[in-house]
Amino acid sequence: MLFFLTFVGGSSGSTSCGFKVFRFQIVAAVVGREMTRIFSPNSVTMPRYGGIAISQEAVTSVMNFMAAFVFGFAGLTLAFGLLGLDFITAASSAATAISNVGSGLGPVVGPSGNFQSLPDTAKWLLAAGMVFGRLEVMTELVLFWRD
Image 1 (tube, rainbow, N blue to C red):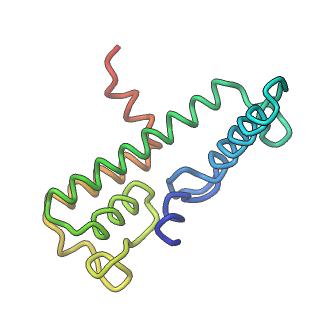
Image 2: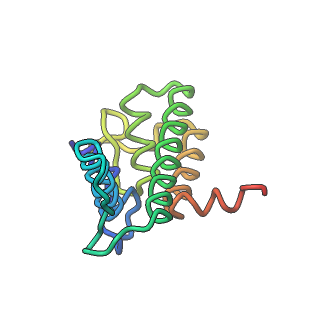
Image 3: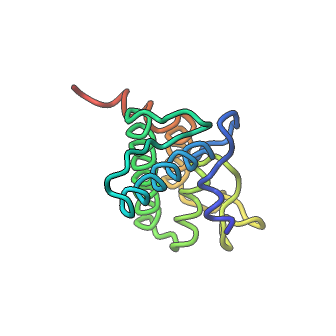
């Protein structure tokens, strides 16, 4: 459960990273609308957040953010795995780096361990993951995107 809560991060004003609670609320509103459309295909509904209709641009932005976040997490986990770390250490290290929320799980980087025993390459990847998560993912994509 703690591993999955790592991805939430906090509320919109929180200094932790992650998906943030409001993005989960927007996704829940969109999923609710889609469920309504499945059961009532002729109904016209708009997803709402705080009583205000959510624009398609906002929905697209949230979905793009979540996709970039998941791909970043998967890429970091894969890189840690290629460095020889076990899956629990690799996945929890990637999650804690991108979400900036604290220690990982498992015997190496768990609550009773630390990141000191990881190879230097893994520490550089952790630092890159922290920047990736701290700047809210999309900032890096804008910086490095060529038009």
